[in-house]
Amino acid sequence: MNNNNKPKNLFDELCKDYRFKEGFHTCINCGTCTAICPAAEFYKYDPRKIVSIVQTRDDQQIEELLKSDTIWYCGECMSCVTRCPRKNGPGLVIIALRDLSARLGYFTESEKGRQLLPLTHIMTGNILNYGYCVHPKSFKWEDHKESGPVWKWHTEHLEQSLARQGANYMGDGPGILRKIPQESLDELKAIFDVTGGTERIAIVEKYSKLKAEEMGMDMEEYEKQAFEYCSDKHFNH
Image (cartoon, helix red, strand yellow):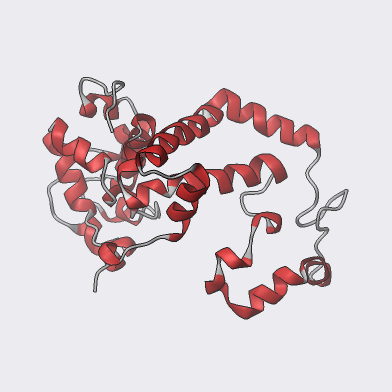
């Protein structure tokens, strides 16, 4: 994918991100971050290498990183921050890399990066429509069969099940899973508008649409594949 918006220097662009400034210091390549990293146990993932690549300030290598699956393996648990002897935060560096990858549209070049579209729609849709990050109305058991038959029964008897647990599901007044007033939802939308959240949604959709066209798919097919498909190339065996 051609990108006419690419900045002159990717490292300088990363330096504008306050998370990068807080997380990127003098790496001594000791590998402590990788040793403590939960993601490195399962994925072909090495936060030490990521920091090492960024530290080269090599534009081509950083661009390859922005287009790779690698930066999407991190769970952002920040275990690395607690153990690094130089007070680096590879997790913070990862967040900055993800942000730049999204802004430049490079996320569509990797399998894991393309998952940003369904994740954006699900998370922001829940927040803007219901006021919650996770909401039962948007959870379809068919999309999460790994949750098992108990959760299937729960989704089929949602109101009955939540009532037994004392929730005020979609009800007025206080209580768990209560209906959030429209006034509050409007405030959430205003926060998204002011902080760049709405713009980020549009950017993710824009580049995803371009990639879908490149792959010969409509947006529904593209998003479904991004949500469901996972090759085995990512994992340690």
